[in-house]
Length: 503
Image 1: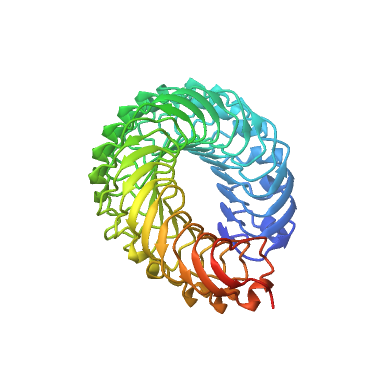
Image 2 (image 1 turned 135 degrees about the vertical axis):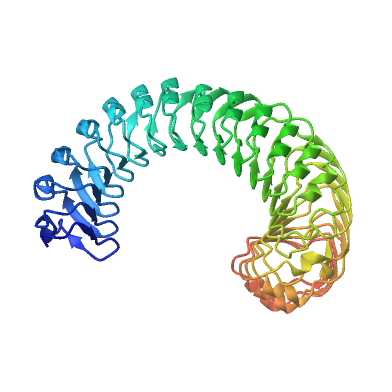
């Protein structure tokens, strides 16, 4: 095919070594062989046979061996993509001499070795992707010379040392990812005053320390900010409220202190706010009600206190709410959940009191619902009966819920864990419970539930732990009850059963 200049064969069933017929097509400038099962080494003769290549994509194959040094002879090559193969031998130094490169994609190989400082010579480079490549290296400050680069992903390697402040020289940076490495030290404030085009900053799962630089508020185009799972300390800077385009903010699993800044209320496009596993104190600010795009609010495991602001009911897109393991008190705003499709709601291990909002599960979407270890009382929301995707529910520990259990529980085929112990629930157990075939733990200890145990309960073949003690059950147990093979704990004590022996 001597006249062909553009050849795309991606996503086919090509296998074996590099196709010989392509090496005989000397005028090709664009070649895409990605997403096949080609193997063996990349041929050294490639530059000699295809000297006009400007675009070469061999990603997602099974090529092995080193990246051939002969590629340095491809003087017109601007885009080199060899990610997702079995290449080894490190990032070759010769790549630093290919000054015409705009895109360099090496991810998903077991290259190993270090990042060559000579990559800083690629003044035209715009895109660098070397994630999951087995790199054991520091980040060379010379990368700061890449003043046209707008995308760097070095995630999931074994990078160590700090973030060189010289990286501020990459003034076109839009997306920066170095997550899941062993990087430490402070995050240089100069990055945020220089990277004015930044939209994504992902440095999670490292060991960065010190404070979150308040200069971060200068990067006003940020959409994603992930700083979670580091060793950051100090207060959450109020300047985060200047990032009005922010869509996702995750500062969880650090050692942040102080209160949640009221300025976060300016983040009206934010869909995810994760602050869990810190040392935050104070109350949830009333300004949270302005964050109307919020779908996920997770502040679990802090030392937050006080009552929930009534403005939390203004979060009309909320789906996931995690407040557990704090020091909250008072009642929950009665309209919380109204018109929503909450999938997760956890208020556990606080000092909440009063009734639960009766429309908390309006959208019947609830899957995880935990209110254990509080001081709630009164009736449970009747909408629970229609939450057919319910998976886990905990009401035990200090609460005093009342009402007929059959009116709030229905058919829940996904239910795995249910603990309603220590409340004042009444009524009988209907045959609907037989459809909870994935239930592994059922604890109803210490209520006022009465009546017989229906033979349909023998359908609960996954049940491992059953506690019906301290209730008002009567009658005989069905004979099939003793054939539940997964059961390892059963407590039926302090009831009125007349026959507990297997027939």
